[in-house]
Image (cartoon, rainbow, N blue to C red; front, top):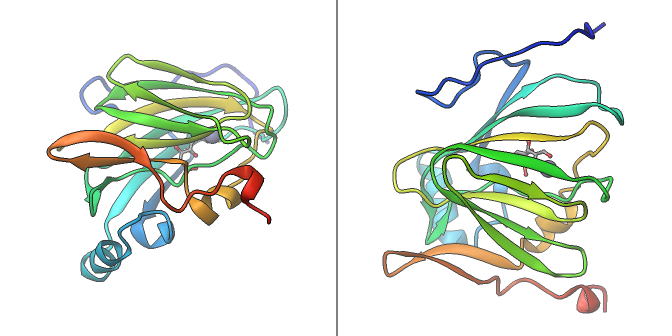
Amino acid sequence: MMKDIPYTFNISAATGLPDSWDRHYERRLSSMKGQFEDTAAMEAMIAENEPVLYEVYELKRPEVAGELLHGVSVIRPGQVGNEYFMTKGHFHSLLETAEVYYCLQGEGMMVMETPEGDWNVQLFAPGTVLYVPPRWAHRSVNTGKDEDLILLFVYPGDAGHDYGTIEIQGFRKLVIEKDGEVKIVDNPRWVSPERRFV
Ligand code: S6P
Ligand code: ZN
C-alpha cells in the first residue's frame, strides 16, 4: 500500500524535469490520428520517423476524491503541416473537476472549450499559472521554435479522462503558424453541439 506520509520532489531549474516519478509515458504521432488537419503531412512524418510529441511524468496517488494527482508534461517543439505539436486534449470524465497548470519552461498555449462550444485560449510563458475551471476541455500546444514546453499539473484524483469527443472532431480552434506568426484559427471540421447529432 502507498505510504500516506508527506513527501517532496524537486524540479530541476536547469532542465524543468522532476527528480522522481512513478510513471513515465511518451505519446507518438501515430496515436494522434485524426487530430492534425494536414493528414498527408501527418502520414509522411509517421512513415519517416514517428516523432514523440510529448512525455508525461506522473506521481502515483489513489484515483479517488480528496487526492490530487500531479506531475509534469513535456511537449516537444515541432509542427505537423502548419499546426504546432500538442497534446491529445480531453474533458475530465467527472466534468465538474478543475485543474491547475504552472509553466516551468518554454512558450505555448492552452486551448480550451466547454461542452456548449464556448472556447478560450491562454498563453504560457515561464511562471504562468493557469486555472482551468470545471467543465473546460484542455489541450497544451508548444508554439516555441526549439524549446520544450514544460508544465506542472495538479487535478482531482477522481477526475478521470474523457478523450472521446475531442477524438471525433478536435477542438473548435487550431493553433497554426502562418507567415512566421502564431495564429488561432477555426477548425473546419468542428461542428457546434446543437448540430452534432442531427
Ligand atoms: C490530466 C492532465 C495532464 C494531461 C497531459 C497529457 O488531467 O490534464 O496530465 O494528461 O498533459 O495530455 P492528454 O490530453 O494526452 O491526457
Ligand atoms: Zn486534465
